[in-house]
Image (cartoon, rainbow, N blue to C red; front, side):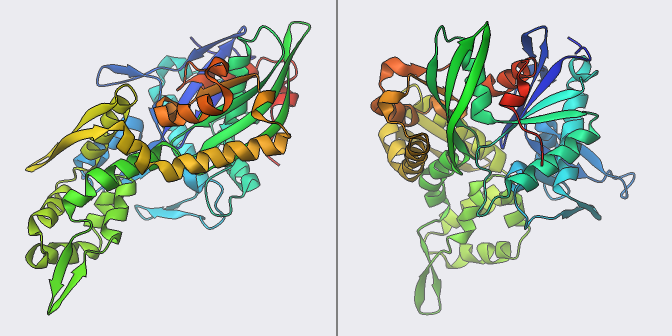
Length: 435
């Protein structure tokens, strides 16, 4: 489907994945992609840069799964960047040097959007002039600057040729997608769980003259979500088998292995940076002085042979399995390193309790800002990958009741809602522009 000039396109640029939807005549269609014969709609929010052997002064840019391929093949020769949305609202991030050229956030986002367009083929060949872009309720970071983030977004989307650029909080877009199901007026709590943030919006929907009207009541957000869940699994299942919590001998002293060696496991692409850092020399020495040298030997092999991505795939499979079963097997194989065992959902819930507490606190804040109690909420719509985690769903079922729960299209509801919103006659009531 090629978009008509009066159509709109919705961009759900996420920390982990990006989803694009096109609107035409009141209907929305997701942009599709294909990698090694496998179709998909959720495009990984990742970039890679490397210089080809035949021209060291050039830069080859890739995105999505193609960027992962490039990085896994040549981790030390490839600059890999993912979750870069996390820097959008940071005034401390000005630019980064990649292959002798400095890239601002706007440059990174522009490069990413161009590769999304390229891999979208005919579907994204003829873009409309109007784009509706999702934005978090609260950008991640210690002191996020929302206005700065939207200005950076604006520059990148203008470079792609858009002239009418609007921004909508991501849970509001999901709420609009859900509101089309409503038969009457309702107050809806939308909980959007991404890779880096969990956002909550309370919206009052009314039906007038065949159109959906909305009034935003309150928003709240917290900078924890699916990525933090993954790290908790690795920290409890994998890191202890690689030496975390063990000791080494230094002369007559027995000292703990530094925890900083394991913080890099928060994001798998950081592991190659650890391998190239000064710490790697010290880690190799620990094989001779550690009280449990076989564990440090495993750590060295995981880092040397670049098994980080495979490790995170194993963790993702486990998390998905625990969403449907009280107990699930975990198995990671990388070279001679083999880590396996049964994991109880009860244990996983205990490990992610700090994140669950933060999520519930953000729900409290949204209700407080809207001057509502749970009884004043008619429907609860959960969206995003981590909405499948039973412990997350239990928070809302316990507080609002199972009868109020709604879900569906968890991974694509935001992009679809953004695109459909573009056809609304009162779009100004739904969206904002960069200041």
